[in-house]
Length: 359
Ligand SMILES: O=C(O)c1cc(C(=O)O)c2c(n1)C(=O)C(=O)c1cc(C(=O)O)[nH]c1-2
Image 1: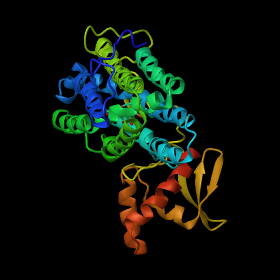
Image 2: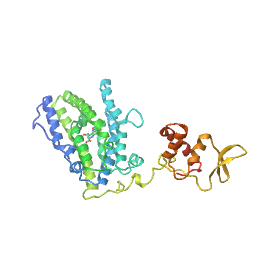
Image 3: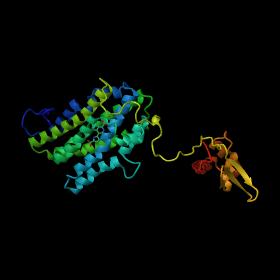
Image 4: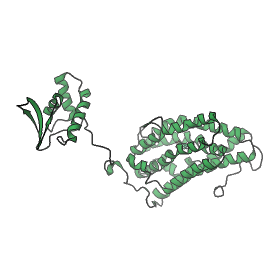
């Protein structure tokens, strides 16, 4: 695999490098091959891409993010030292989080949603370029098959990531009006996680690459990983910039976006404070004299109502919003309108589900 991208011989000889010389040689690989130099990143950071091109980047990069803990689990499985595993497992926690809604993958999903994607579309990975999948999977195979030293050395691109992250966040915030700080929140945590991880990996490699052969392997691993990152951007460039040849089945602008319609199977729509509830044709609030209570009369059905529902429904006239109804009832019952608003929404949800209320 290295025949295609030969690893430069940093020394030109078989000499054992000192740890500092090895570090310098590794840094030199990044200086010449890290993906910050790729034309796609230059366009991305300088605000030269269209919104759809930024979307293509966010979607494809999701695949990388989602597979990083798979990759790190493969690395972990090769470690025979509990102390080492204890340190490495933090990477998996960083990406997976401690529970649902937490972690780097979740934050990347928020980034993808922030540029307009539906979460279910991103999670399906349907529109990801095959080249992205091939490159990412090659990384997972690499760490599973090569030595532990090479697996750890391949993560060393993270030495260079704080620079690219600072440049990317500043550039994207400045240059794209559809990008917000919240959308890019993924990168906040990476600014501390990446240097912590890279420092550990670099120390490990400097300590364990104790022969010229092992040092060459470490350099080759880092070169390989630079290529994993680089070819993903080649594929994005080819498909979405020039010549703009999108492969069959890959994402096409317009697909998988929230504007396509609501995500399937997300459950019934919830009432919001800005909604204007009204009774559908044929549904009426009536006082039932014989039972001395209010009921909701619908064609061939009658619904009993509790006092709170009656108070709310008396205010439902097809012109007041839920917020205005809450304000009104707040005055009558001397309660905080914002506190009762939520209860009103829940109650109206129940009626809407029974089809005796529209919003
Ligand atoms: O934004 C970037 O340019 C960038 C680069 C890299 C990298 O250099 O590998 C990683 C990340 N981000 C990243 O977010 C991340 O979680 C990550 C994990 C790894 C790895 O190899 O284990 N690299 C990277």
